[in-house]
Image 1 (tube, rainbow, N blue to C red):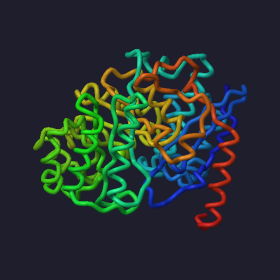
Image 2 (cartoon, rainbow, N blue to C red; image 1 turned 30 degrees about the vertical axis):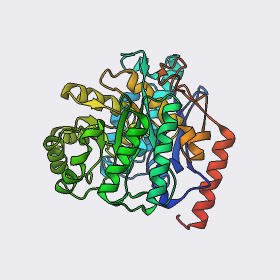
Image 3 (tube, protein in one colour; image 1 turned 60 degrees about the vertical axis):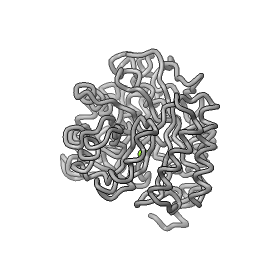
Image 4 (cartoon, rainbow, N blue to C red; image 1 turned 90 degrees about the horizontal axis):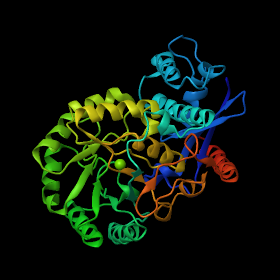
Length: 400
Ligand SMILES: [Mg+2]
């Protein structure tokens, strides 16, 4: 079998809002086509216009090549070998960041393709299942524009998540710092009160996390702000500090008792080596597309296991990433949860409509998938609608 074409789809939710700080409103989806008629699909969480350029740009140096030119004519079943040749062949294009995130969508599609070709779910080709089901947690970020309204909505959404059967949820509470949703503003004390409201709403037996999305500028500010959160029985606090402040992460991880989680933006296992060894986090959160695909996410998973660190994959995209996370989690005994944007508690049309036959939760658990590959297919009419929205936005924003 040979790769004949790589289609890149830049997609946009027609109702996108730049102030919403939600990466579920755009997407890069790749389809890898072969001479035998099989097709694999993958996606990644990165500016899709940039990712498309990373995939389609040609190159004039043997270590600064374009991803597409390297893959046309290659055997798609040699997934791990292709990862190495893509990484080495694009080394001068950056080695990290958008290039690796884009490569992650390709690697995800290659795993999908290999599973389909061999008639097996991806996890069976990634070392086999180590568990019988996966536990998703609901990520909650209401789309409102005042903090009091946000607080009320968050409490209502947490109750709804529990009613939907979730056993775990994460409250996004970011009223300060560069990631502040819709420019919301609130004090650290109001953050504490909001977490207390959510804990009261879900009750004591429910697994609860908080994501503050880089809200605190330094370790001292963070330690002072989260001192009062110990009684809320939080499973972890996510990304409390700027991503590059690993010395700060180590202080926050060591100087207070609540476990710290991070890693959603990282590219390649090498960045996770630093996060674990220098940042001392207790949970790593590889985003499967961004880290470099299922091939690289498996390596992060193995390193985390050897380091005694738990893994909870990040995802804020569509049913494609949910499927990839389910296959990764199936192979990892140290993966207690995967992130999950409930379609009923999310504003993104992309999240709700892009995928057919989405992997679903029942009674708080996701059963191991049985279909070959990732096990999901694109909803073609929805894909065309989101492509058209992206083309319109490109024209109206004069982006390209
Ligand atoms: Mg996050």
